[in-house]
Structures are given as structure tokens and as C-alpha cells.
Length: 164
Image 1 (tube, rainbow, N blue to C red):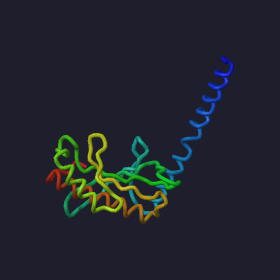
Image 2: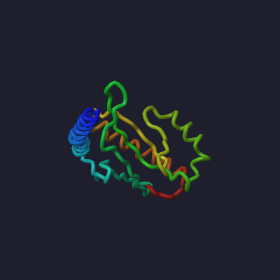
Image 3: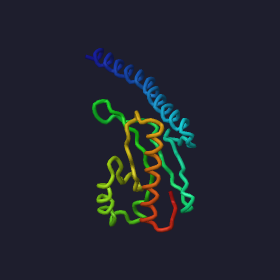
Image 4: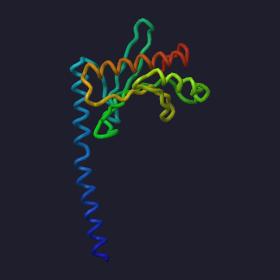
């Protein structure tokens, strides 16, 4: 029995080790895919410590900016479909009293076909999940839409403050 357990443990550890070596490869390919699409669209960005793409959008007429993130890795959802999350903060949950405004955010979600307000950690986000196969133009359109919707909601919730 001890030999069986030792052999099983070696097999499991060996498999996990091999999987750990191979796991970064798809993520890197995905990162390059987004990088390539953003570069071809002439879009400036930084890659944050989590591997997400960080973009800053300016709204000169309103003298505002908005940070938007594109996830560094795609997610499998159903039947092999991979989506990429594009998201931007609109408020801080506690500081902006989001609990009292949650129903309004849920009602607003009904107006978006592929985007929605979400709470993650200490922030309220506007998030859009698009197919990872989106073209450069489609990706940029989605990013710009997220920036605009998020900035409008941030103004609505916080007044003149431009935190994000």
C-alpha cells in the first residue's frame, strides 16, 4: 500500500509540475494577442503587475480622464468560447454609498446588451465581456464604450470628482 501511495504521489506531483511549466504559455500568447491588437489600433497602454492592460482615456471637453483595464488572459465560458473582460471603476463601494444605489445600477444594466455594473472588492465597475476573437477595431470600440459609460456613471455618482 505504501508503494502505491508513493507512486501515486509521484505521479500527481509530476503531473502538477508539468502543468505548471505549460500553464504560462497560453497566457503569454493571449497577452501578445491583445498587445498586437492594441498596437495595430495605435492605442497607448501599460501592462500592470497582474498582466492586465491599463489604458487612460481623456475627455478633453469635460477635462476628465478614465482608466480602463483589459484582462491579460481570456476566460473560457461555454463550449470553448473565450471572452476577454474590459472594465473600469465607477465608484468606491463604501465611500460612494453604493448600497443605497444598487437597485438603480441593476435597473441601468437592463439597457446594456453586453456590459453591466458589477461590484468587485471595494469598487463598483462597469464591465464588458467580449469574444476574445474580436478584431482590433471591435476591441477598441468596446474599450472606448466602457470608458465613456464608466466616466458618465462616475460623474453621476460622485459629482465633479474624477477619481478614476
